[in-house]
Length: 151
Image 1: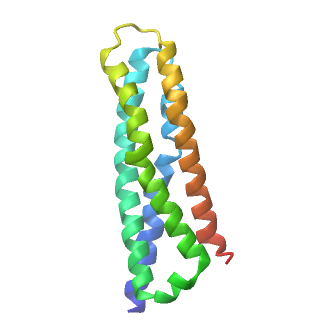
Image 2: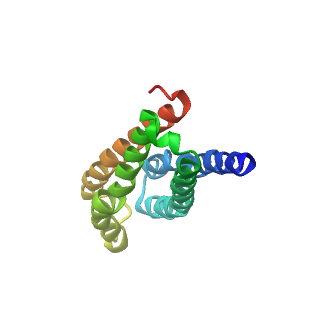
């Protein structure tokens, strides 16, 4: 059982790198665009990177819960439970907050005909990015809890 647990830990850490790494740069990919053509291309790249975030995040949750099932003492550790709750909050932010904030942006990108980036995009993206920064902060707290195991 120890070897299986070590494999789970390996997959868990690898998934964190695969999933969270790209997640931290999603905002920066689109912020550098200067024209609508660049912005549309940046969002295409962002969608591709988001696939890694989804796969890594799913593997993180599955391997984290499996490690808890194999080592039930983890459910008594404050850092583990806090990390799990924070992860579930961040996960829920996707459909509850980020998706609704993304819809007007997607519509704007699909329908806008000029090359200049409209003020409406800037307003809408700032709202979305504010929540993405919050989510990234949650993930940084989770990473710190996983490394330090403070309580």
